[in-house]
Image (cartoon, rainbow, N blue to C red):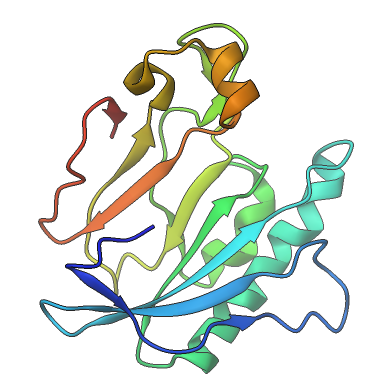
Length: 182
């Protein structure tokens, strides 16, 4: 989701050609233009397999460094973001290859997975990974949607999602909503 008044989708999106079959769900990439300053950003969405445990998730997390490099090949003049559900906290050692490639998590505190207990969140699995030397992140955080909608976590998990949405803004842009954790 993006604000049409501020950001424009630039051209055809791409699915990562995973010839080695490393990803259960291939990453998807698109480029967007900031209408105010003319800068572009390439965004890849991924959904890392959950599997039976950490060992099932680790190979895909480690392969994200290859996605990071591929993004630069596809859109060489764009800043890069990899986002969505990683099923692994940003503190896990499996992130080492992506960190060595220069990426950092935008959200380092809090949690994005709704537990079945109202107001309790666990696991910081959803995030944005970006190059802090290239992209000026104004704010990033977690949208506490059950509180915004006035529903309990069990209902939220049943009819919406067990993941709280995350947001990221660049420069001095504000997210424009409340009930967020930054």
